[in-house]
Amino acid sequence: MYAPSLGAFNTFGSIRQLTTIQREKGGVVSGQDGAIEVTPPAGRGCGADVDANFKLGLSEPYLRAGNEMQDMRGRVNTRGARVGHCNICDEFGPLTEDHVPPKGTLLVKQVELMRIVELLGAGPIRKNRNRRYMPGGVHFRTLCAKCNNDLLGRRYDKELIRFSNAVSETLKSSLALPTTVQIPANPGRLVRAVVGHLLAIGVARRPHSPIWQVASRYFLDPAEPIPDEIDVYVWAYPHRTQVQLRLASLQPDFFRTKPILFSCLKYFPVGFMVTWSIDDRSRVPLPNLRDYMIHTGDHEVSIPIQLRPLVKERWPEAPGSEAAVFHTEDDGFGAIPSGQKN
Image (cartoon, rainbow, N blue to C red; front, side):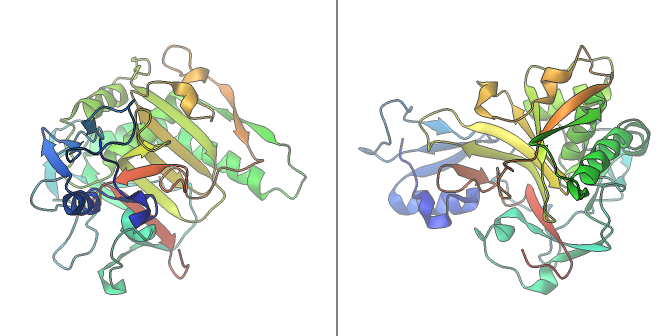
């Protein structure tokens, strides 16, 4: 296939930008059944080991007309209709606001929310008046009361808050820290909390595509073991910028191997990367919560968190010159504490 000039947007960019680049150079980007397929122009290629047609694997209709994630003033829209379909269970009814990450993990008065391509410098910079300033952190009005309050709030967020605060206390310690620390956790509840918040990202994102159906069923059924399609990696993240990626595609070696379809949630003090049907779990060299789960994972374990060396701040959303990431403009967000420059 034809490899786009990734340097044009510093090895990351939005699908809309990729569309423009491909058309200028003779390639075609098309959307069919929610997938994005890149087809090279005749006579071009990037290696004999790559198929002529390359699907990025994005499984929602990203090239649809209309934009639920933008309000009338062009700001990022996080407040869906007061009554609608829940992003997790798909039931129709009153919707509530889910904090991503949950309250109790962050101590910020207000954050400035922007699209991920703007945070990373791959998209046009909106005027400040078009950004959304959110008191108390990022929240999306996308979940019914049962999924948000009964399941996330009362059952799973407590574990995510406990785990996050334990990592935070370690990072803030004045003692000389070892290379790796062990953090107590209930991996089953921790994974369901992360999956639930990822499902909450984005207005009007009903769980119709295969990966979100798998994620929704897993979140809703506490007796179900973690599906084979889901892996959840964790690392220390001692940075103030928050990242919420509903879905993106990581190409570690520029189209020579299969892409890694992933979601990501990062906030001080931890980062979580959820991969979807990854072909080789060792491709992500981080602790995988799956490895610490027996059956549903509803038990206590110790999770190793590496403190030295630290994972790069902008990984995986902007991995640098050694890889490329394809984002969609409306399914990735960044948030910084008000007054802080990104």
